[in-house]
Length: 338
Ligand code: TXA
Ligand code: MG
Image (cartoon, rainbow, N blue to C red; front, side):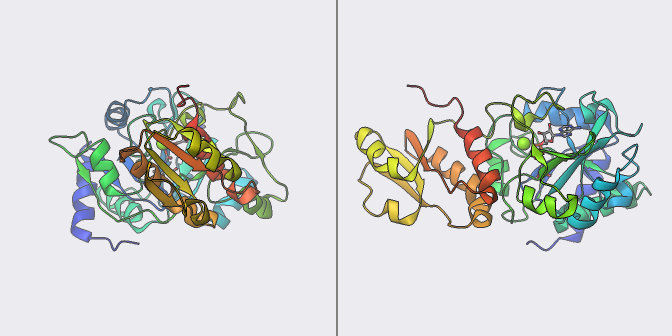
């Protein structure tokens, strides 16, 4: 993980305080941040991403004490989850406090709060808090990609998509190297009778169950819960048609697409005798944590390659791969044109 440059952190915090947008690394993906208290700056996030205004944002805080100034109450299970998983890749949806304006919540009565472990957001929050003499200062930040595109896990992804001013839309892009987790935080809705998972992530439902005492349900895509942009049918999508295939079906599909340039993400063994039409072959990591770390980088590379079609061999079906399956399904939804 990158070491924070203190002078750059101060400059970034000053930009945030003045209403600007700063893209920064977190342990999950790069975020596009604005001072959470500044409705105009928060509105600028939506404009920069081309994101519908009624989609709520995640608000990043330095610790649980800061979180309490943004929520009307933290129920006991949420408190337990904070104790166990914060700082880290867990977002909790809680009843909002008056401080959480409609621009952050999409007009809902709940707010998504996350305390990141990465040194860059921690440094930005500390500096922003210092500038405003407010330890509960917060940074609203969705993933730093255009709406519906592949999430960024590297500063180069942000520069290529949103870009830095004057050519792009972000005031400052902080390069903190690749994100160690690589997929977005697990989101747990704690506003109902029992917590439920709105978006799976590297903190699995089995890990949550250790704290909650029971396996939380996973809200389905058509579940009428709070709106989450990550629950749209198609999201995190490459531009090129992407197909997900069971491992045993890969070979036959490559044969069918004989004259089409392909990019393939599959276990090493499946790539050994791939024919020449395969212009990019990427080796799928055998463990979910390592697969997640490189997933978006792989999707970016496949999308930018000379391939016309992208094929991904589906990883195992077990619970620890749930978040990967979720992201792969979203990436592939609706992109096949035949
Ligand atoms: O790992 C992450 O969570 C990254 C980094 C930057 O922290 N952020 C991220 O933000 O993934 P974004 O905006 O791309 O996704 C935020 C998700 C959306 O699906 C949003 O709808 C949901 O969180 N969300 C935020 N507040 C919510 C609320 N009050 N109720 C339901 N969903 C909420
Ligand atoms: Mg996103």
